[in-house]
Length: 96
Image (cartoon, rainbow, N blue to C red):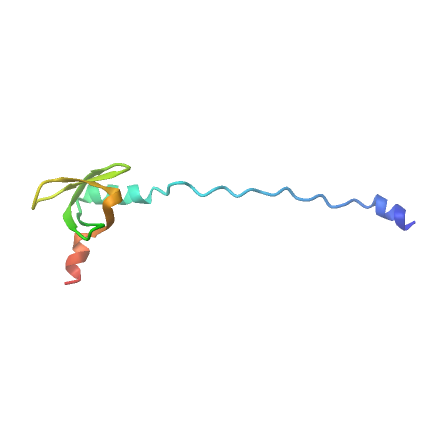
């Protein structure tokens, strides 16, 4: 009798596992930031890996480079791999 009851009861079917979507390779935040600074012609400070600071306005960028227009020297094509970080020059002046 017990055996018959067990045979008639249905086993719960396991739910299929739902795969999570992989995170995107790019968030496009970097591109958005560059475009915003280029449109506003924001004066920027680019700090290189060796500590050198370059002042200028970003004219254009691509996957590996930034073109920096400067008033105090020649315009530069800077490899992103050599950049430690960059920030708005206005932020630098407010700290003084």
